[in-house]
Image (cartoon, rainbow, N blue to C red; front, side, top):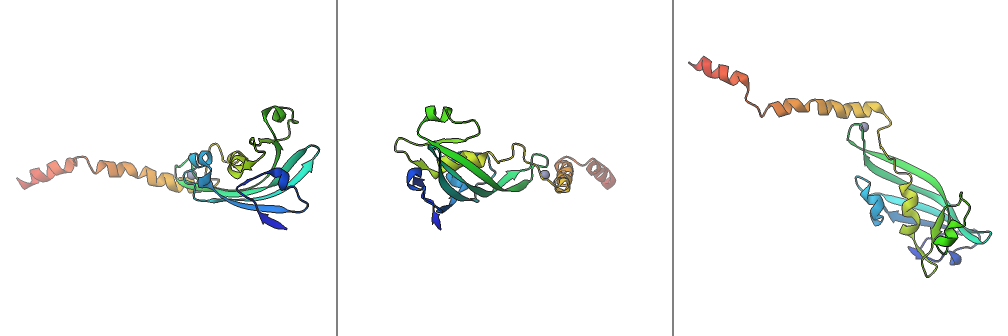
Length: 172
Ligand SMILES: [Zn+2]
């Protein structure tokens, strides 16, 4: 059974056997993520399953999105597609987060025991943005650099052509 994940929810109410949740989140809803992308026009697709593990509620699933970035080698635009699994543990406060085992990734609920999907997934998505994005295919960058190499010729056009002086001489 698949249901739409609400924008804001209480994890306690979503722990039900076999209920898988789906959510489509816009990158533009995530301001910190959007600030590190060259454009935030793409969606983030999330599938999530809630379960109880010991005294915690855990959400596991997968995040899929496309990052629009600028290649740091040739400065042309590029994109990176990701499809990454996640596992997060809900905790009531910072203190409880500190008592969790290191391998568990805590998400702190608000005072009403709820969480907003942006608060839940934005950090997780940001983990997968490459720090120094580069085209994986070097030849793509080379095309960009060839164009760049031709630029000085354009700049020269603005300067006085030394042959203009010769042209004037020829007139006399
Ligand atoms: Zn490049």
